[in-house]
Length: 397
Ligand SMILES: *Cc1c(COP(=O)(O)O)cnc(C)c1O
Image 1 (tube, protein in one colour):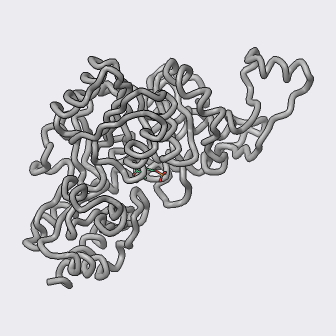
Image 2 (cartoon, protein in one colour):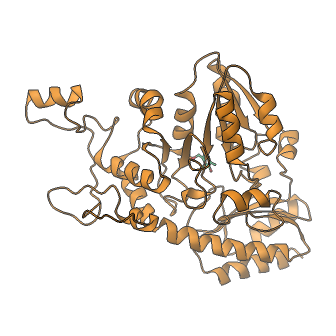
């Protein structure tokens, strides 16, 4: 922080200032330390740095001043003691899972996972000798039944991709505690503003900072947040020696993204709520899944654990793949892309893109049909987006 202040500052203020360390020039904007290494005044100083007696930096794979500013700002946002920034969301998820398991351990995960997360859980972990069980994350009895004496980690994402199911994080965290396991939550869809997994009892939170944190479609990034104790014991060495570190340039971009995160997420969520309303009023739309609407399948849990809706909307057209494609093609402002959390509004057909690698049965289990579409709402004017959706629906009759 700039000057000492006794008052507890709001998140919005922290996202502008927290973690800033200024160089001798006193620059206003965060400095970009695009450097691999660091030099020492003397051999004794180098020795002290390596012994840990002097807390400075030694190599950017371990830590970097710009990256540390981003980590500190994320800690302030999340209410976490410590964090490690990574090169992508998948580097963060993989590190958070792999750093705390050994051959012979067992992981339980909710089956509605981002595609690459699912690959890590059901393909990579078993290759390393770590068994995994996938469950319907909304059913507590399935989590309970999956627990084994060697279960070390629970993993879930909520709201889920693409059907925006919401899992009771506090209930899963209680079960993890009772089972001697740690709960890792991928909080990308909720953003750090609308849901606080650590406050709900989760032990570790992971983000793809690529999404809302950058928010303008530029850089990949990720971050793992937890207690200092967990990071020291499990992540610290894994991180230093396997090298998933975030580029200082991307950290700088993400820091600037954090300054505007609350403004963006508020506006995107408000517009998404309006578009969800519009979709729900149309007879060609079979169902709309939007956290915050009273007809959301887990509306009671949304009310309990989220402080707002979502920047994403899932909906199913009462038609086939051909007309779902025609709807996408008729959109003028909303672009076709598998990304999300961008300033640009995006539409995805999960069955043929993000979820094409799943079997037909696995897709059906997740509630993804040939006419399921996912919208990620951006920063365009809300009225313009409503018109775009309205006209594209009219175009397919
Ligand atoms: C995008 C995403 C990831 C992976 O993040 P990358 O930055 O693309 O590696 C993981 N989980 C969820 C829920 C995501 O949306």
